[in-house]
Image (cartoon, rainbow, N blue to C red; front, side, top):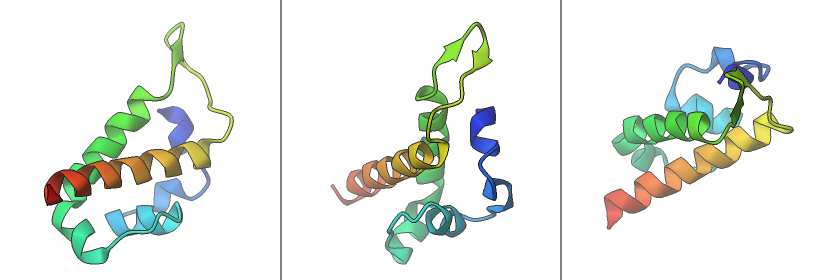
Length: 85
């Protein structure tokens, strides 16, 4: 996951809201407060699962910011849909 921490500014994010703002992912504040831990946990897992490893070395995805944004949005959608069902 080294590629993720090389995105300029990502090391300064300190809350769930700051991740959503940084990656320009729309969210409902009350919903995010209710399920921020599951969303961030799933986001972390998706980051790990969606970056292929070759010879135990991480490969940098072509558009790291866009990939991270997509994975954060998917995590939010999955967790909020799961909690409202």
